[in-house]
Each structure stands twice: as C-alpha cells, then as structure tokens.
Image 1 (tube, rainbow, N blue to C red):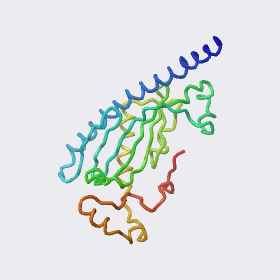
Image 2: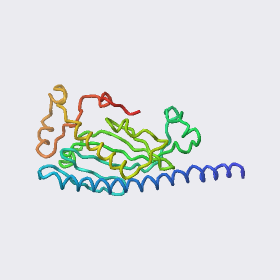
Image 3: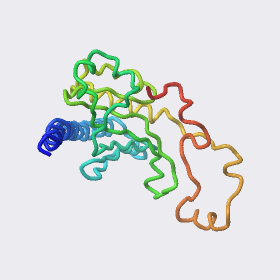
Image 4: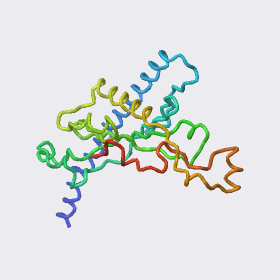
Amino acid sequence: MEDSRKIIQDILIRKAGLKQDIFHDTKNHFERFKTHLLQEIEALRASVEDPRIRLHLENKGEFQVQVYVGSDVLVFQMHTNVFKLPDEHPMWQTDYLKEDKSRGFFGIINIYNFLAESYLKNRSNDLGYLIGRVFINKDEHFMVEGKGQLGFLFRDLTNSVLTDAILTNIIHVSFAYALDFDLLTPPYEIVSKVTVFQMQELEASSQMSTGKRLGFKFEAEDTDFF
C-alpha cells in the first residue's frame, strides 16, 4: 500500500508539476503574443490610410485573441492542456529529447485563419483553418508546425527560444500567409442546390458554408505539417 502510494506521489510531483510549469510558461508567452499583436496592428493602422481595411484586435478572454487584418481574422488560441509528442514523432530521435524526455511535453498556441465576414455576420457554418501552432516546452524552447513559411522557419527546438524578434516574425509570417491564402470559388456542384429555407435565411445570415478552400483539400497545399 505504502509503495503504491509512493509511486503515485512521485508521478504527481514529477509529471503534474511539470505540466503546471509548462502551462504557466505558455500562458506568459501567450500574453506576450497579445502585446505584440496589438503593437503590429497599431503599426499597420498608422501606415495603412484606407479606412475600409480592417485592422483591429479583440481580446476574447485569457486564452483567445482575434486579430482582424483586411478580409481575414487570425485567431490566436492557447490550449489549456499540456501535450506529449506522439511516440512516432521524429523529434524523439534528437539528442535534445533523448537526454531528457520531459522536454517532449508542450503547451500549444494555435493560429487559425477565418474570413472576417464569417465573424462579423455570425456565419456559424463557415470554415476556418489551422495555419500554425506553436509548441513550448519546459525549457521555454519552441518549434512551430504550420503552413507556408510557418512550416519550415521555426523547427530548431534544440536551440530556439521566443525572443521578441522571433515572436514578431511569427506574427508577420502568419499575417502574410493568411492574406495570401485567397478565397476560392467552390465547385459548382456544392452550391448548385439550395432549399427554400436556406434562401430565406440568407437574408439574415448565410447558411451556406464558406471557407477559403471549400471543396478542396487543405492538406494538398505546398507545405504540410510535419
């Protein structure tokens, strides 16, 4: 009985404490993201004179912030759980994780891309896409999985820490990818049929799902998650 209780105590101290530390560090970095996002929006607003172009930020509580950039919304969302990399993940083959397996646990900040109209018109059926996610471990080292440049610029977990310059770079790359990720016409077959109810509801809020790649596989883009 005492031996089994000791095992449980050791696991709680070692693993639960580790996860609490990672959560705390990730939350601190998420607050830094919020600050830098606001700074970037203010800088863009000062240089973009066209009043029709949306440039503003909305805090949605501790763990989510919405950033309106033109016709896009980027949602930065911190997951409240801590995750271990899957056993088959190639990072486990690096000396950095082999030396200390606890380095393979991460807090995650997700970056989603939606159409601004989807939020402004409350089109709940519209689609968004995960374009990147930032992994932060107990050493406060990080890596990014993502699309476009997010998929290859920030992979050096062994040596990378979130300096202000790197954090700003992640934001710039995310903005650029979202703005370059254009709305495509959905295949004709998807929109060729509509019910009377849907047409009536269109007056208030579109019931046809809209997304930048509706009808196409997002995974077929040039850079996949690794």
